[in-house]
Image 1 (spheres, helix red, strand yellow):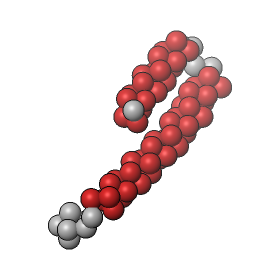
Image 2 (tube, rainbow, N blue to C red; image 1 turned 30 degrees about the vertical axis):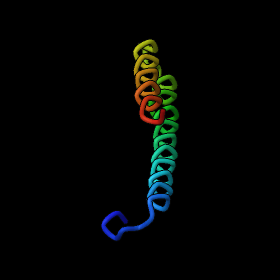
Image 3 (cartoon, rainbow, N blue to C red; image 1 turned 180 degrees about the horizontal axis):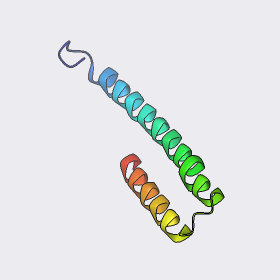
Length: 68
């Protein structure tokens, strides 16, 4: 769009849409991680729940920084 000399507002609108789509995709991945990995680990008798929660907290913190 820049190379085609499109209006700045149109470019910003497209960038905003891309960022929103990336956030939505990230939330889906995070949700799947919680259901598949975190809850799965708990259901399968994972003995170190603290490690699982630490990993989840780190994932949430990384994702939160990326959407701020």
